Amino acid sequence: MRAYVCFDDTDTLGSDRGTGKLVRWFADKLPDGCELWGVVRQQLLVHPDVPYTSHNSSACAVIDVPDISILSELAEISAAHIVEHFIDGSDPGLCIVSETDDLSALMAFGRQAAIEVVTQADAYAAARSAAAHLSGHGGTEDGVIGAAAGVGLTANGWAGRLIEYRVPLRSFEDVLPVGEVEAAGIAVLPVDRNVMMPKPSDTLNTQGWLRPRLWGGRAVLPVVCTEPGLWTAIAKRPPSVS
Image 1 (cartoon, rainbow, N blue to C red):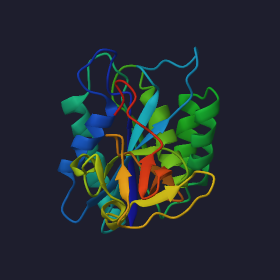
Image 2 (tube, one colour; image 1 turned 120 degrees about the horizontal axis):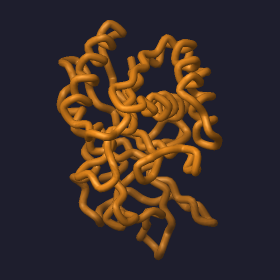
Image 3 (cartoon, helix red, strand yellow; image 1 turned 30 degrees about the vertical axis):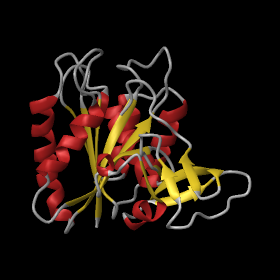
């Protein structure tokens, strides 16, 4: 069974860590029987009426869990993790839900939060519909908006990029065989005009930033063919981005 644990707004401008890093650290605290599938960064609306630190993104840990009873323990561990690592002046929020619940309202809320201004009341209404845990942990508690939206977008399976994966993304070489990435469960998907399929023995250039997209609930790396037998990831690391 899969659970979604999403954090938002745990940092401040100029702090030495962002929410993405906080969630990646959280993977080291999972209870026995739980295994991290990945951490997905979700981009929300950037708008003058929306307060945010730098990019207005949340980060959702996707966790394989033994059964639904573990969710209450995950909530306790997550709240303690925020207390340990959040930056004073931030407005943390936390959302936790199981895939076995009806997540349609949270999915709709996630899409809404990506394109228009929403409120805490909207977030709590969507969470109640899904029987999700949603809580604020300091400041204005506006982080509940991004936390709920991040769960909805991630559960939908068609938004966001993975900043961590069950096979640590930072463990891969910058240039490596396509088959090595595919063996880890990351689909290498050509998106150029001809969409020829790469061979496992072909070479993949990650441009030093292996960050698959969440497409169809899977980890997918979009690539283009730059010369015969050589594929290049379409994204490269922007400045100051996880």
